[in-house]
Amino acid sequence: MDAASHPYRSVLYIPGAKDRALDKARDLPTDAIIFDLEDAVAPDAKAGARETLAAALGQGGYGKRFRIVRINALTTDWGLDDARALADADADAILLPKVDAPSDVDRLVELLPARMGVWVMMETAQSIMNARAIAAHPRVGGLVAGTNDLARELGCRARADRLPLMLSLQQIVLAARAARIPAIDGVYNKFRDENGLASECEQGRDLGFDGKTLIHPAQLAIANAAFAPDEAEIDLARRQIEAFEAAGGGVAVVDGAIVENLHVVTARRTLARADAIATLEG
Ligand SMILES: CC(C)(COP(=O)(O)OP(=O)(O)OC[C@H]1O[C@@H](n2cnc3c(N)ncnc32)[C@H](O)[C@@H]1OP(=O)(O)O)[C@@H](O)C(=O)NCCC(=O)NCCSC(=O)C[C@H](O)C(=O)O
Ligand SMILES: [Mg+2]
Image (cartoon, rainbow, N blue to C red; front, side):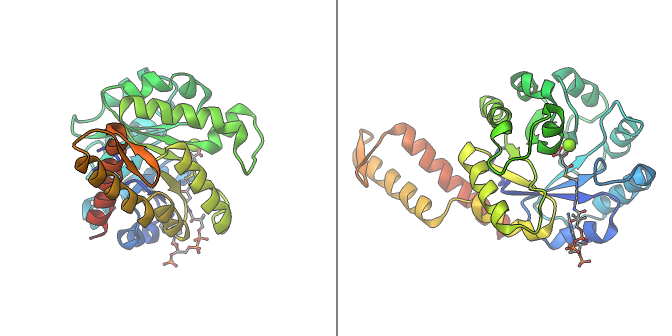
């Protein structure tokens, strides 16, 4: 599902072993959920988490939120069992971590029914080098930046402006756009730092990401606001479309700037995003 028909402003990780968080998520204003069996679950809790999560998904109650299950990498002791156990779960997609190349996706696809979507964590150096081919895989429906693993692999320093990650982040957005699938930014680890999160969301939005992965409910409102078109953008989009149509499809001028067909495409996309958000929230 693309970002115009379903919003992905906020994509909240929920530890797959935590009943309380799984339950709480049913009422949280998040556009999508990543039910996590990987980093958020301790090794000795992995098998139990699989069962807890399958039961929570079976019970339902997550409404229109896009439901993604992150399994462990297929090269780990748990990945294959995760994929087999969750292949028929009531979820929209399986998210595969530590992907290096499209062949990793091929391995997963063999274990899943055709209806199950596949999303990919972009968090290894290889995945960034192979971003275009991974995003173009016919079963891949979305990319998620794994900025913690990526920083670890690159050996780069954590900086507020994320300069050392910039090439990788842009490569993820480029690959997603070329394949016309959503791209979701990485997490902001200091989950009680609202200003820091707001500024990283702004940066992610500027780069072209559709939304941000989050680790705590307190981060939801900030991401939802940052990745939604604001009133001024919606108003401008409406006026651009109106002026273009009044000009009979030629060049129009709005607020001193030209409006051509390509600007109208962007304006229509802005309105479609606003409608999709209203539909989800309604
Ligand atoms: C970070 C946390 C461990 C903090 O938990 P806690 O101390 O319990 O926070 P609070 O007491 O403030 O919690 C308040 C209530 O909110 C619920 N809660 C907390 N987090 C979540 C959540 N993610 N989803 C749903 N509900 C949540 C608590 O249960 C409290 O509820 P109540 O009992 O009603 O008061 C914790 O937030 C947490 O575990 N977060 C998720 C961490 C995670 O998923 N990590 C893995 C993803 S990030 C990653 O993998 C990186 C990536 O791969 C990369 O490479 O970058
Ligand atoms: Mg990771």
